[in-house]
Length: 625
Image (cartoon, rainbow, N blue to C red; front, top):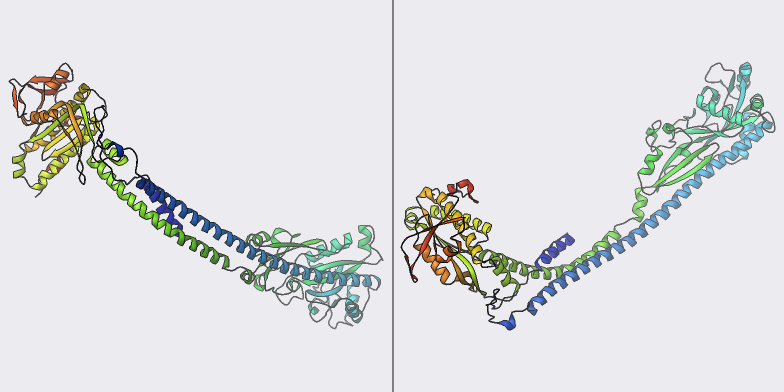
């Protein structure tokens, strides 16, 4: 919010900086070469006060920007450094915990493999061990540790000797029976297993009755290699964990036979290591989430470890889903027999909270806040300068509305308060509403005001089309002129002003006729003096003999007519655009004496309302009661 506020003020004051709020001095100009300079030594440039104001405002803006940017930059650097330190600490701790988990699981699996190999070597030489002898053999190796469900001996029993095998086993296992009770050519029976207490339900189970177990056992037998089964639900499983069997084949020979046929013929059984996946992980780790996948399995059965017991039997999460849920993930491969397991770890929230805190964000806020305070003071100073400049803009807008643009721009950009000039080719038009005094005395003030407003506004628009400058209005009288700014000839200016006057007269006839009113015009041309008078209320005006004659031509005219004197008649009498009709006898013009005048009309005839460049809203002239 502070940065947004600063930028808004900055750009606002930048837009204002182009305005020069100096107080103009007195000067006159003469584009025609006949002007005079009243105060030449002070008219040339912008004063030092204005330059200092502009420079100070820009300097404050630059300094405020640099302070804020430096503060933001320092805050970002501090934040990045502290945040990077926290992330590094988290990563190192997480990688250490993940490595410990990986090493723990690896050691358990190595222990199971060593036990299986020891038992395998013994059973190769002595396949007929008793239950007590087998227990003593397993005890000679590593102790059974969490994660290893048990070590078992699986002898090969042919169908012909099944009954005798059961009878012999019942001597050590009262109630011993092969399960499930199905007829097969050969059986792979869990005969001996340690520890017995947690695996009693598996004793007598025919592993060949389970297709996944049979496939893995036949693979181990034919290839003479240890084989790991896919995930299984163990026969002795009392909970909801998955388990796997580490299968090592045993042959009636000191070394595995060379051919597959010989291996099948001399095959004597298997020594299996039984692993429970949940126990293998070693319980819930307090710092990391653990996921174990069988990368050798098909895609729909790759999950070995689930988040909770209720999830067993459901593939609630794939390896791709686990790795996509966190930015910090480790993946470690474990090669177990012929299968590859992948252990995926992610940090838990408590490990993240242990390393990641709000300290970097707090420092970022502190640094930026201090910079914002310093920058804010500079911004407020620049804002005050900008607001002062805005007042000057409003002053300029007001001048543009009161004065011609060429005059207002001179008063703003140059240090002058009075502008005077002589224009030799100016043409002037006066327009007056005939019968206005009587009309205004009978109609409500609102109606009179609306009529004058709409009429004069329409004439203003016509002025813009003909480069005619509105000078002023006095009551119902409208004064306009052209040739004030430019080097056009008197003839060109006269053509434009008469065309303008014809359109204005026709527009007045259209809009005023419904009120039984009409307008009369007087037009003249010649040399005039133009300039600006007034300090607090500047006003642009023109003076001269040509102006006086135009005023008298209007006041002595007739309704709906445009009256001109010989000045314009002599120039335009042969112009096909206009028709001049002599008024007859000379007319007495106050202050000028008797003078010959003419009525002017257009050669195209009267214009319709649709021909007018501006169609005035006559509904606005309705009486307002």
